Image (cartoon, rainbow over all chains, first blue to last red; front, top):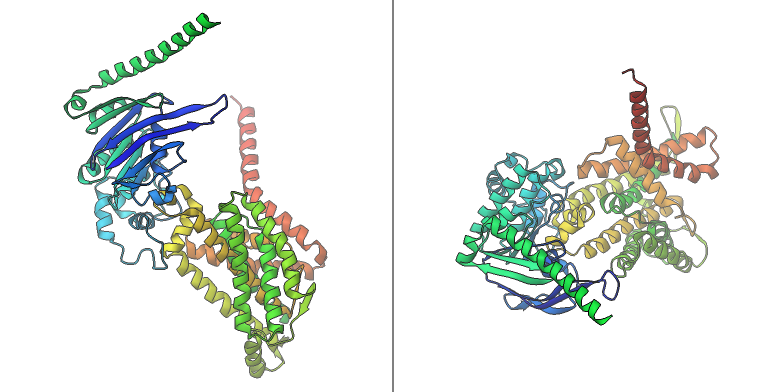
Length: 270
Length: 314
């Protein structure tokens, strides 16, 4: 179980660019659940991911995984428990290393890197099977430098690498946003399959209303650093793309209302 | 002939330097100028310890260990205190200048004791004599000995490095230079990898300094000046020789070949009347050309193609 308690983060505090990215967020993610996170630009959805993965220090609050508090851990240490796929399809793999070497590094997630040969005792058969299920013929390219592969292929392998050791938490940060439609579709179907077979608590941030409507068993909409909507179960299943678009208009109207309210208050007091 | 053999031996000593620079520059993309200080440190420590009666192998190993400490200092300043990598290297290099003077007790120190090359020289001299003629040219047994010694040491280091870069730790080091964010996301501290990598890199550079001092029979406080550029020249020359391949083994071998070829070119240039004082200037220009040349050439070709396109008949 992943738990966030009154998590706060403000970027550039005390300057004109001050952004209250997370404004006291309380969330609990059940073990093995699959949550989709959406939100407008600057809503705090990416900051939420950064807070969990340890990209920065929190201003307040705590984060724990299975009652182990991790909010003080550096990013690399949290990665023992958290698998990640980034938006940039090239960010999750090392281009000069071969496909097999990348997988081998991922298979030893969080362990001390020893002087044992990296590929000794590597389970090539199992890796080939894993690669074959992507369906891009990658099973024959174990010994090619991964830099020779396309963005979609690399993102698919990153997804395999992130789930290889069945980490407690799996975080997908708009991981199909930078792909062409066909590759995005492939990665989404691979995501569905891998998440269904894993016990990881999965959090997927997305821009795609279609993905938000069809994937996951829970949906969270972020707005202005807070949780605006949090639905699960039947209620989540019944949500359609149209509902979500309506939700976004609603959030934008709220924004405007806030501005109007400010204006009204200002005119009254000045 | 003797000049050729001495040049090859020198090339192989500097190949060890090139391997150190290969680690920092090619693997980590950090031009680590600590090398200028750690090269001298390796030479100074070995010269001093030999004078104090240490056996050559221990004195050489101690010199390399000194380089490793210098690398750790640079690595910690860079990763822990977030100082720019180049500045971290400059700080440690500058500090090492004083340390090297203290180690030697003067600005230079001759080596009169037995060195790591002495056994090789003894064998070579007993085999072919102090002076002998091969293919009608005079050859010194001592030069052959040093050549054999440097060959064996350099080959061993090459093989060790190639094997190491394919271990879990070595691959994690390569991944750090290639995509640090990825390695952190896989649960490894890239800061520690950088400290470790710079330690290894500077250990090799200091070992090269130690071997250089033992082959020349002296250490000097100035001897490390500009070695980082020499190392870069070898690495870049090697890359040109074997092409821009991704194989680890070829990268390592390329650095060695680059170093030997560079020494040969220098020897030929000096033979043809090049003033040795101009050597560093020319080396710097060659390295600059090798780094910016390909890009400039591409830009120039593209511009010409555009010009031609504009003037093409409709």
